[in-house]
Length: 437
Picture 1 (cartoon, rainbow, N blue to C red):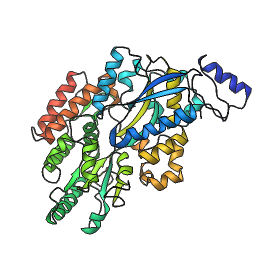
Picture 2: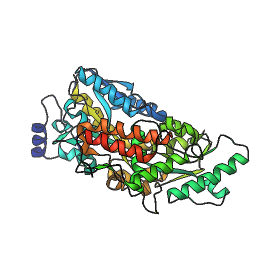
Picture 3: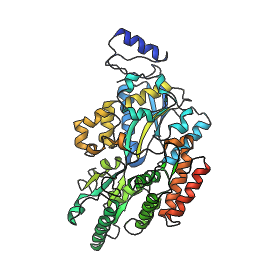
Picture 4: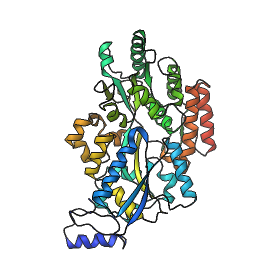
């Protein structure tokens, strides 16, 4: 609920002063819709793995039960994060008012902040206190809050518990262990007639998802982080080269050759069909794999990703926020929807249907969510322990990421060895103005 527990007249008066004249401060038990007028807004949201259906259900409830004066047109974004950013930038270039509320990757704010509404203009600090402070910081650019955190994420390892038991194996703690266990299970399943079975699947296509996977490989092996916080290039080091060559050697052995074209959904399709022993993916895949019609329901577990040595795990910080275009004709209504979608009750409904990792500390203590999403037990610190993508790249991040995931994809495809690819990448990043180590 927007503006809860404003019982004192002085506090109420202060809150009113902080809000634009078109806003309405809600009393306890009321809902803030931003406007009393009949308005229409466009909300661009995701499509991955049944995502759109979950959002449509929430939007329908918002229109029916919360703010019936607001009509929300829910529009699907491209599945690829890279394509989504390109779509948004087309809207921004034309200063289009067709875009109101939309999802943004946690790494985008610095690139597109000039086109986004400062949500601080409509929400005060008390309302924002429900979120992890680190996420509010992640979506803040030069003091302007350009998105509300919606859900967080970090890469996880999915594994088939029934197959580990069948072959007398344990979940791997290192990448070398993963190679041995994955190959053993693959050989066994193929010997029993499943020629489509693979040991391990992940996201290997040349797109933003590979940046996330490859960064995890680097950091969990003692390598660099693409760019240091000071802007020093960290790709051409022995540990990074070694792990990239190692993962490339898996492709065609116990990793399908087609992995170089896989995004999240292609890897999940193999996994959820029962044709992989291990998968790297985000938390959304958990609830889908536990669906009643899933052939692997109750036959899998999740854990932190392996590393070079036990405990050297890394998870790239992912997640999405909700931003409002500064070119919107109805920014108050768009912020009202974003606020409602990120409140406790709506997020419980969202996470039960969708999985993912919460952005409210209180949700990690929710008993219903704990029972439905056991991975919360080891991801509650994800927002402090996860590895961020290089924010120091700022407005150049999209170019940096494209150079990085293209180089790694070339290594996975067998077109170049990692030493050559990383040396070339280092030079390309230096040409952008970043420092040699």
